[in-house]
Image 1 (tube, one colour):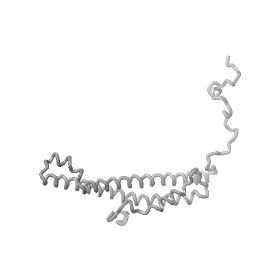
Image 2 (cartoon, one colour):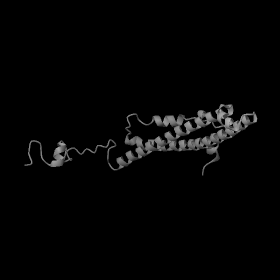
Image 3 (spheres, rainbow, N blue to C red):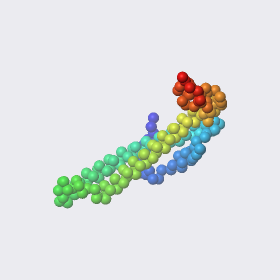
Image 4 (tube, rainbow, N blue to C red):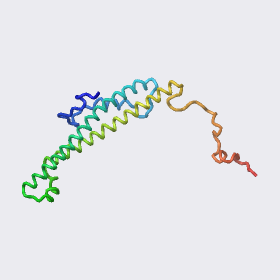
Length: 178
């Protein structure tokens, strides 16, 4: 069940959200992509917990975007009414509402909220991918496969060091098939 604290956006400002935990967790992913099988279990858990934290932030971001959209529509309508009340025709008012201070502020709020939502969604998706990558490493370790993907099968490939045309025709280099 979703708690009221998670969805509360009163005095919510995406520019003041503490995202240190997200950055710290993302920094745990090695730059070369190699994760040792002993690290994989710990990292999988950390990535999943951080993704859960990001999902809470994403819920707030979605709610914040909706609030900013509503505010923008409301200020648009107010700005148009204000222009009409000042003697501007309805057609001109619809074209000139964009220079209203409150509408500009609401537009900026929406742009910031949408950028925040996109950023946190991207981090959420990347953390889930990292979690699944760690799970695959653990699964490979349990099945006895190294995480590098190399199984040590030297010489078992029947086409090793074979010319690709030999694979298609069966004729070795220097021989003729006639």
